[in-house]
Length: 321
Image (cartoon, rainbow, N blue to C red):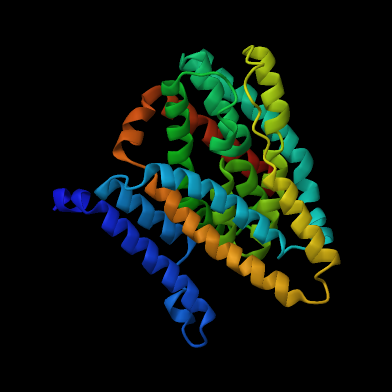
C-alpha cells in the first residue's frame, strides 16, 4: 500500500489539489456553498501533511516557490477587506507588545539554546530569530551551514503546523475574544501563514487583528538582518526585505479611500485571497516529510518547544491580565 502511494504520489497530489480548488470555487455557485464550507485552513493543512507523510514529497521545489508567492498575494488580497482606521485601532495595543516580545524572544531563545541545551550558536540563533519574527522568512539571515538552516527551518515548520491546529481550539476553550485571540496568535505563532490561518479559523476580527500585528512584527526582519550582519560578519549577505507588506498597506489604503463606495469589490478580492490562503496551507503541509522530521534533532526541537511555550504562555498571561 505504501509503495503504491509513493509510486503514484504525483497523481494523488494533483488529484487533491484539483478537488480542493474545485470545492473552493463551488462556493461562488448559488446553492453549492455546502460543498466548499468544509475546506478550511486546518483541513487543507492536514491534507497536505497526510499526503507528505504517506506519499512523500511530490513537487518540493514547486511547493516551496508557489506557497511563498501565493501566501504573499493572499496577504495583500486580505488588505482589500480591511479598513485603515479599524486596523490601526485593533493593532495599536499590539505594537509595543510586539517590540517587547521580539527582543525578549531573542534573549530567552539564545539563553535556552546556548546556556541550557548547548545547541550550536548558528542553529540556536536561527531558531530564536525564526520564533521572534516571522518563522522561515526570518531564518536565512546569516551564512549558516545548510544543515543548521535545515534543522532550524524544520523545527519552526513543525511547530507552526501544530499551532495552526491547537490555537483556535485553545482560544475557544479559554473564551478569548476576537481581539485577544488575534493578538495572541500574532505574537505566539511563528510564521505568517500559520498566524493568518489560525486567525481565519477563529473569526473575521481575529484575522484582521492577527494579520496587522503579525506584519508589523515581520518588519523586524530588516533591523534583525542588519544587526546579524554585524554579529556574524555577514555583510555580503543580501537582506531579504518583505516588500509584500508594503503592498498590503497599499491595499488597505485603496480599500479605505478608493473602494469605500463600492465595498463589493474589496469584499470579492479579500474573499478570493482567503481561498488562496487555504490552498497555501495545503502546499505548506505537503512540504513536510519524514526526512524533515528526522533532521530536527532532539536539542533544537527542545529549544524550539521550550521557547514557544514561554512565549505562548507569557503572551497569553499578558493579554488576559
